[in-house]
Structures are given as structure tokens and as C-alpha cells.
Length: 198
Image (cartoon, rainbow, N blue to C red; front, side, top):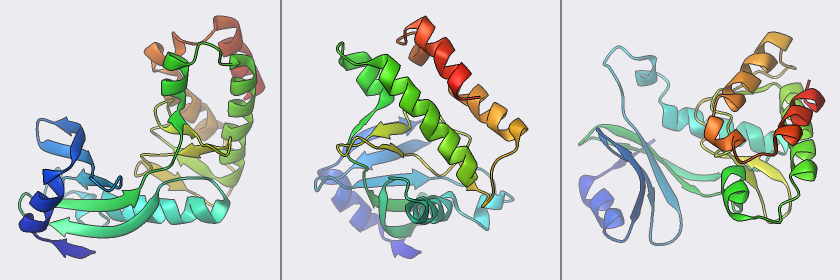
């Protein structure tokens, strides 16, 4: 993990668009060259993230997803910013649109076909041992190659064996809790999706 000076960070920020921030500061920036910076803070001195920073976990998950053939962001470099303390991942974003974007903007979308494929994709992830606790339609991308991929992948575990029924059910519970997403889905298709994905 490379040191990132405040001067370099400020240079990047000059032409950057802040995509996400909270009360503690900036979290995701799109730089002028189209690459992204994602910043992670350490929530406490005793946090396990001091040993295994989420930026490192993001990079490890990207490498494992690439090995498994799942499209995801391409990590360029990992950094440590000292003031304020952050671990930082610099990456190329995964091209395409999230399912949330597609559902909100494309009125001609074939939802039946889309969600049949989504059920197959999630089942495939579970068979590969991918447990994604932040699985929702804002983190699933349909790429220009018409493949599903994943973004925002720090909150993920790749177990190397098929998930248990309990873990699969918990993953679906995460996906289903976003009522605003499912409000854009034909109710009959949502029911069929759950049936096909079991």
C-alpha cells in the first residue's frame, strides 16, 4: 500500500467529482481521467480494519472475482492517506449501468428476461462461494457485453465452496430489503424471480 500525500490527493480533487460523502468526509471520487478513488476510514483504533484494511479487502475481492470470471472494477493501486487517515483504492470503474439505473430510466426494459438472468447469476455466485452482504440493484451492473458484474465489493467474502442454504437466504434478504428498488419491478416478475432463484 503506497503512501498518498495530501498534496497529491488535493491535485486529484481539483478536477474530480465527488460521488459519495458522509459526515466524516468524501468516500468516492470520479477523477478527471475517469478513474475512481474510494476512501475508507478506520472507525476505531481497535478495529480489525487496522490489520486488514477495507481497501486491501476490495483489491483481494477484485482479484478473486476476476479469477472466477465475474466482471468487476480493475484495481490500479492502493494508498494510505495520513491526514485524514484513510485507506484508498484507485480503480477503473466497471463499464455499464447498474440495475437500479436501468429500472429507473429504460421504460422498454424486458424485466422478465432481465430477472430470469439475474436469478441465474446470483445462483452462480452462490455456487462459486461468493457471499456479498451489500448485494442490491445499485451494486449489480449490466456491462456493454451484456454480462452481469459487481461493484462496491469491499463487503464481500469469497469462500471457495458453495454457500449454505442459510447464507443464500441471508443474501436474498439483503437484496429484498431495498423497497425502492423493488417498487420499480413488476410484482409478478418479482415473485417469479424469488421462485426461480431458490
